[in-house]
Length: 460
Length: 83
Image (cartoon, rainbow over all chains, first blue to last red; front, side, top):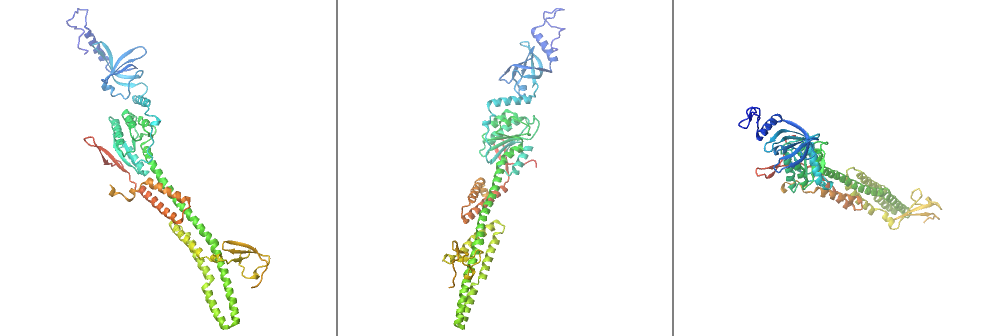
């Protein structure tokens, strides 16, 4: 354009030597050429004012400072590349070229790069979107849904080959989460990633089996994580039927997705842990309960064992004592009968002695006591065997044995009216010579004891 | 699917655990006859074992959604590309 007109050869207008007349168009063309030559690559700093976004996608505004204004336009193809929205009052550093709009003779700057001054473009975009969604209430605490108490099917939106899916599956396996994982493989950075992530959330939450969704990716630069700061992702998360956990980057990375998500996990691994936790708690509950089951039964057995101990300690020994006393009386009676018989006739005596001998053998108290003692010791020994199931079975048998013991008890004899007379030292009184008048004795009867005092003694 | 079910797959983990907890409560109350206690204990051991087995056999099922040319998703087994 610069060479379109030769100022030294002005053409067929009313020019004379020394006076060169140019048409308006020529002036504008000349200016356009000069501006194009000297201002084709310029950086300008200023504040945006009078901003207008047209339906065509072009953005019109003025760049200004304290003293001056410059008309600016950012055409659609450039505007689309902006990560943030232009707005009045925004201080920017912009790059472009100056151009004269020849129909009006006005010049403007055509901008192709605009960066917010101070903050990076991404930072600005982040803050703008955050403010916008916050205003809409998308981050409100009351929108946050609790995670399912026991997740069954987890939808995951992430790269199928990234570190995130690997970490998450590893974590779920480690904590034995009884879940099914449905992965929506999505690109998690670069052009089109945000749309894929958003589609993933929408697709997974449309499945009736999915009850929680994780969106995430491993660590990276702010540019790498950028997709999770895009509005499409935020909208998809907000619209999800089921709770969404975000697990993007590292602990220190906060994305818009984190703010919209029902739960923000610091990392993909932490997100998986949230899903696994209820399963872990269930496992703990199971082992606790199994432990309590054993404790309850051990306690039960302990009580039964104590009852058996009680039996062996008191009643069984008393029973033996009673047996002894009983047998003692009978032997004495038989002995005195034998004496009498001896006096009557030797033959009778022999007969009586034979009978006595036989009776003594069949009733041999020592043998009987020994038998009972051995039986009790065996039961006690078996009770002390360590295994629980064994203990349990043995206790059932002991219970039955105890019942049998009861049935066999000579205390039943006491029940029929016999009693045993004991001295304070516990020895059994079987002869009148063993007590003195005024001495206290102890009568054991079927249901207890009677304390007595000897008034007098006399032979039969 | 049903025919391939493992024996413990039929049990509902949560339900079984709740029943087990009920049994422990009854046993802890301690006013049961010995044979009733024994029966409860046996049932409890059975439940605890089934739950433990279910946990032990847990194998994470992972599938991925794959889009065909018509844009329809189908579910495929997911194989990790890393180890």
